[in-house]
Image 1 (cartoon, rainbow, N blue to C red):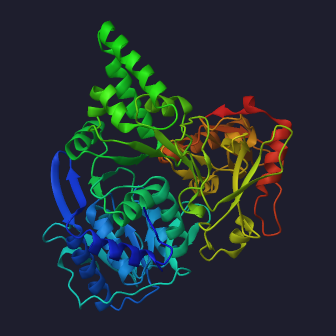
Image 2: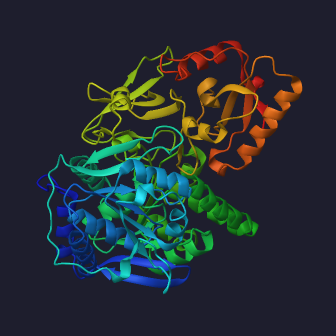
Length: 570
């Protein structure tokens, strides 16, 4: 059980762990079916210290920023830990973004150091060099003889003896981006106190034992995996297993080989695993399927009050062995989790701990403690979090406002956005929900113009609009989430659409030309950012004195005069 009350910062908590558990495995890295690396806690400490000393030899000082832009692998943890011990503010970046998007975030964050991989640096190096002029770029796994340009090779870094730099609880620990670059980059500033409070609460609710193994499937820059796949396991003496590929066949093999006990998933991966299990069950002879169904019913009855992994793994051994036989439960969040999927896994004795949170609030605001399991809600507020529903309607649905020890300090260099998001210490989530008699929160929609994909990505319409700048024959346009304009009461099948106002006097042919260009640009967007439809609008958009579109007023007008039937497919 974690006791972090007297720990001043994340670096101190993790440094203590490398001493307490020095002989245990800290990190295992797998590439397909091959183990490609392994570190004990003592080896992790030595490798991180080496990176600390190298940064300090280059003039790195406490409070400087270190951006990490890598896929899941051990060097992500080694580099982040080494930078943390040098007193760094970490800036975890999404390796799935495009090179221009990544470069824009680097320019916004202004890190002193960028730790990245060779394939990523190859693309970034083609971008305008302005963001990297004063940045020490450290590249991992570059081929021998590769032209690194102004970058240096991680494997050859050497420096002075490391000097550990302790930080205060109120000091900034991380800048985590909750949006891309088309709109205003939103760098959430989270302190060491924010993370320590979250880690202690989750570590007490879902303790991990020494030697248990967490499977890091989500990107480590993701808020869930940063907490559940980096901080908590290493603080508690567990082992973090990284896998380079997410193909289901390799995931299953790794889980079986290493006896995975914990993992976190987004709903898309959960549904993929569910589909594979259902397909295998459907292939069974009728008598075997009947037997399995009866055992599932028995397991449901026996574990209705709380999970019992020992019992479930015996009753349903063939199913559990597909996951290695030791998987206790799965954390799931980042997007809406379908009740059917959560209840299916719980019936198999692999409960899904459904949580709800925002980047602006650390990792988790509410979560199901599994006593008993419920798949119809996102749980109750975790200890220390206050939750209110503001502006409730007659059905009890209101906007979720929260406050507590994990709320961010604000958005980097955006005081106006910060004032809009945090009011008198309360964070406006922009999500709509209701509370049942047991205090469980049920989300029913969004009050803000944003969607969350099943893969857990936040997609802000403002970020997409840059792709449509300068459309011919277009006077103005604005991108919206369809469920924001016309709420359905569901959080699935969310869509993005564009409201287009052609230039006054445009002919039918000119409008068709506009739409053709719109479709062509839309096809070039990443799948999760792609628009599904458009709405033609003839009235002038209402704007602020600084010529920004008043989205709420435009949405109100659209909602009053049109319905979903007005959306035309792109």
